[in-house]
Image (tube, rainbow, N blue to C red; front, side, top):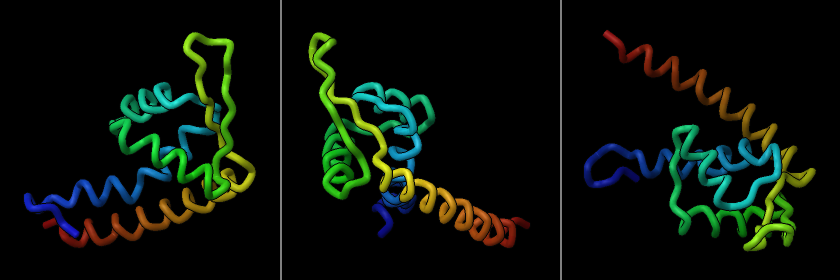
Length: 111
């Protein structure tokens, strides 16, 4: 579905956010550091979007988390599970295929 302004950016971002999160969790991170990494990479995300997504991905078995109480305040670190690493590889390959397809479509539209 396209937003009222006709850009469709929200839907496009929503579709790639899972892949972006999995890509940044190649190394364990806590929520705020993950948010920063996504923003620095060009994909800022609100806390109200990120934390429910992390919980959902963990419930699906794609992420594992553990509390690190060596910090004040304690931080919950997320990392890819073995299943998450497999899902990431599969999604990354599918993404690359889709980029090739879309590049072909977009080049056809170029005058």
